[in-house]
Image 1 (cartoon, rainbow, N blue to C red):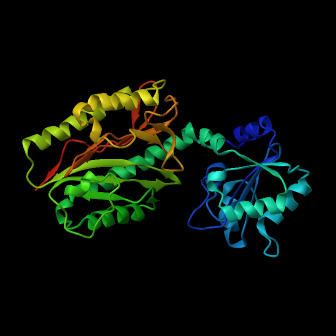
Image 2: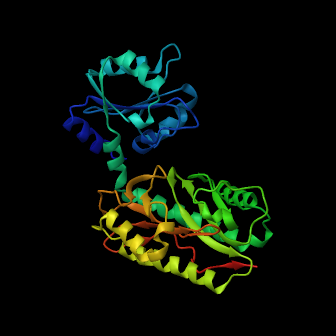
Image 3: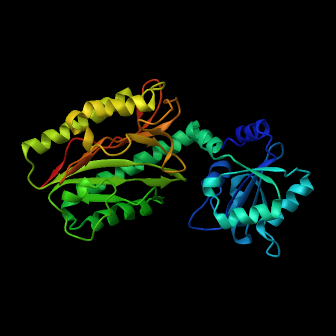
Length: 355
């Protein structure tokens, strides 16, 4: 994805190469995945005017060769950065300035980088983030398919909800269904029932599901790309005031979905959400949404502090919510920004009451 665009940035900034690395199976560097489609241990090097290459352990060689980028097997007798330095020197690549994503570099790794290269390191986090912001048609197709799978899983969960006894049972079902379909998780699943629904980032409990609103925030990782959907249902006998409260939040969310067009300022959309929520605005305690893709949180951020405007090709969430002392409601969808926004998550939002 967009290797040539990154090389153009490197040339403009007079950076000799970009270097992304990962030595931890559990925390794969997202820029490696994005620019090479390889997700594993090793390093990706993108010189400003030569072909990129991967340096990977022998056990990852076959996997890495699916990336269509040159693969060099990591020599066990050499340290990773030392081997990269040798390869660059053989290619005649100057290594006076190296671009790295400092948000993805641990202190120990940074110390080793400086020791091996004696170069000036330039943070290209913002440039990499900006490149990932506008999705290609291939990325959009993957995300659309991921959203469809996520919709199917949420639907299957709600249809059998009477069989669940605890929040963790609901969570386990969602995650099992994702795994069954060959998908990972985009983030820790949230199932928050009753009073717990008032906590936006509640950690699901192995305790009996509480009566009242139940917030289900769930996302999968399909072909390395995330989805992010929230549906709120009701457990038990619902009052008329509670039903009206849900319909109010849903009305606000649907108006905001229609407003999320290319050219709209993110801060303006957030402020409109606050205005629409009226007396409930103080109980809306997080951003209106965020971009997503290879990472679950990417640019743009839909907050009052955002300096960005929505652009065609962005994929973002719209997720207004209100959190009172003993109940909470959040409704979240994924959309593709166009002249007219395209809804990617389509599981029905009509309030479902589970007796």
